[in-house]
Amino acid sequence: MDKQIKYTKSSLRPDAKFVDVANSLRRDIVQGVWLPEQKLPTWDILCKRFSVARPTLTRALAMLKREGFIAADSTRSTLVTTAPPHLNRYALVFPSSPGRKGVCGWNLFWDSLAQSASDNDIWAPSHIDIQFNVHANTNSEIYQKILDDLRKYCLAGAFVAYGEDLKDLVSINDIPIVRLFAGTPFKGKQSSVGLNWRSFHQQAADALLERGCRKVAVLSNDSSAADECAQILGERGVIIHPRWVLCLPGTMPEYARNLTRLLVTKEQYEIPDGLIITDDNLVPAALAGALDEGRRIPDDLEVVAHCNWPGPPSPMLHIMRLGFSARQILSEGFRLMKKSQDENFAEETVCIA
Image (cartoon, helix red, strand yellow):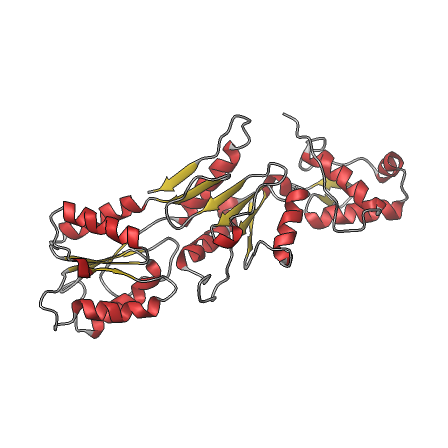
């Protein structure tokens, strides 16, 4: 089905003739008039078609070259690139950046996504551009650039690492947007991919039971996740006291050290022999707290710790790491984007187990 392409006003001068020429040529490429690696008509033919002089055509072609739609070969012919952006360029948008702390601080889930997205060999011929610190407001140059790329078909799709500030980013020109959730996704106007935490909790509980644990504590960054994990442990006959179900925001990981010390100190009359940590951001500090109290891992305390892949180096301790693949999350997002090209497609919500 042919796309009916409409362009909104460019940020460039609306009376600039070369912009009109560039828009028309871009429209032809997007609609398949010229396919990847196919030559465009000669400059003389293009000048005649648009009734422009060579300097104007030069500026129009330069714009399309910067956008990645066209290139020039050794014979000085102009041709569509092998991987034009409307077919192969994707954006991965984050509301934060590496090293940022606080409410909208960076986290290890986003770090795994960024690492996977930057591995061009996996996604070739597609390419994922990673954009940090994107905020949905008129003062954000990065955000406005993304909107402009959507308007001009300079993107084949966009992945949005879900954050409250980006919830209103919606599709333009029917270019697919897929939201990526660190938790369970909820249905919305766009398709989404999230994580099946119930599956994680079940596997973590079973792993500790197999290791002989009968008294288990939970350290989480989310109260409902902690309660679900505790319920699953209880259903398996594990002893889990309410005081062993602990929650701490992932933005304050350093305090996991003190919580774990309180949990396993010898001054407690009863100490758990197993610990499930459901947030990888809390893992290093939590393990440090157990070691501070003289707990030997895994002899005194078996630990199942959440981890996404790719992730940080494994601690020099015998713990079980359980989690999700960022590559699988992105692959599922690509599948949803491709599926969205079907005119009967309805938005989907997918959980990765």
